[in-house]
Amino acid sequence: MDKGVPLRWWQTRWFVLFATLMAAVPLLWPDIPPLVDLPGHMGRYRVQLVYDQVPWLREWYDFRWQLMGNLGVDLLVFPMAKIFGLELGVKLIVLAIPVMTVAGFLMIAREVHGRIPATALFALPLAYAFPFHFGFVNFALSMGMAMLAFGWWLRLARLGKFQFRSLVFVPLSVIIWITHTFGWGVLGVLAFSAELIRQHDLRRNRALPWYQDLVGGWLAPIFFAGLQCAVMALPAVLMVIWRGGEHVSGQTFDWFNWRAKTLWVTQVFRDRWQLFDLASVGVIFLLMLKAVRDPNIQYSRNLGLSALFLLLVYIFLPRVVFGSAYADMRMVPFLIAVAILAIRPKPGLSMRGATLVAVLGLAFFLARIGATTASFALYDRAYDRELKALEHVPVGARLVSFVGETCYNEWAMTRLQHVPGLALERRLAYTNDQWSMAGGQLMTVRYRAAKRFAHDPSELVTNVQCPREWWRPIARSLSLFPRDAFDYVWLIRPPAYDKRYEQGLIPVWRDGPSVLYRVDHNVPGPGLNPGDLPIPRPEAVLIREAEAAGELPGNGTAPPS
Image (cartoon, rainbow, N blue to C red):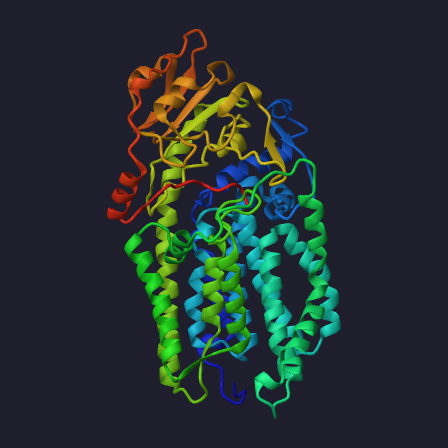
């Protein structure tokens, strides 16, 4: 762009500061960021902070430090909890994630285009995409870091500081990998594609058509681009060591699930209000369609190639990687964001036209931020209501929790699935919502007395047996959980059930359908009559009913990542 032209308001440092600060607004009010998996993670953070000081935790959990590509927030909570306390420390870490992501998007746009194009503002709401709402905090933190690192990679190339770039990206790539493997992988893809374009422009013979200059135009650039990116290869060695451990578990499966991949795209803004969220997806695709058809708009070859590479990764990435679910879904917001950031107006577009696009982009960003702020405030109210039960839970209690779930994937998730983890975080009580996947996280469950109610997903209960899900009907859970292993039962918005399953349970707190019971160990459980359970409906019926309601069957939460 012409450096003699004055900066427009969306290209100034003041606007960048404003946009990054606005990204923090939705998380200012809630005490606990209302992200689906985060309360469960917070229980683990508490264990790691006091594991050597609280003897009963060793009876319930096995916590072992090891090097792995999934430690971002786990490591940051040490200094943050010491300074601010655990809950505020976690909130500040999570609050920084969308701020970093927005700053990274704007930095990339400026480095690629010379100045921030007006269209880049449409990418900013993707900092609050569905994977972030799901609570994949280590992943989201690593992606925020990767966006900033990629912007820096481009800047150092523009300044010609290649030796310095090589030196600094060795430790930086390791830091991002330790935060989460996904961020390191995406950074590698983005850096390679950008370097490939740079090497291509340096080495191609402009006197020849591209098909007659394959060596100089593409083969040599591929080699030298790989050579430049080799400085980020050390984490590959660390990954081999990590995944080669004796106790590492977790499978990789569900490749080329086209139905799910299509749905992840339509659900990229999924939060609370389905029509608004789908309309937001429509705005994004209208923008990209206009960029293809409008002669006044063009794509950066740099980011265009990056978007193409990310699309290929998304196509070939399975749904479950190393036992961690929704792996491909996490790619979607960043694939779309890079495609949007690649758009720029052709030279000569009128100031009025660019300003109109910027105003529309800013309005879109503020509308999404406003809606997310309101949504988080409502979720925070629900958290406050349910967490009053913990005032009646003694420190060190053995607590089994059952959270109501349905066989349908309702658009607005309750975000209560892992709220029981806050009993571990606040009361050092046993909770059965923790994940237990050796090698996937630092903590595993070893409370054998809990039997099949020891860990996730035993906390999720339904009114019927859902197809292809591990969740139990509420009647089965209340009948079969080992009563000698637990002191309290916490029902969080459970489905309706026969009251005789409350035999031996003494209510100590109740709010609507949610209730906390103390287990009377002198009274036996009611037992389970198979005839009492609702007959499961065929999966085809569930699918038809869900599709008619605009929903999907199955609403499982993912292993931590």
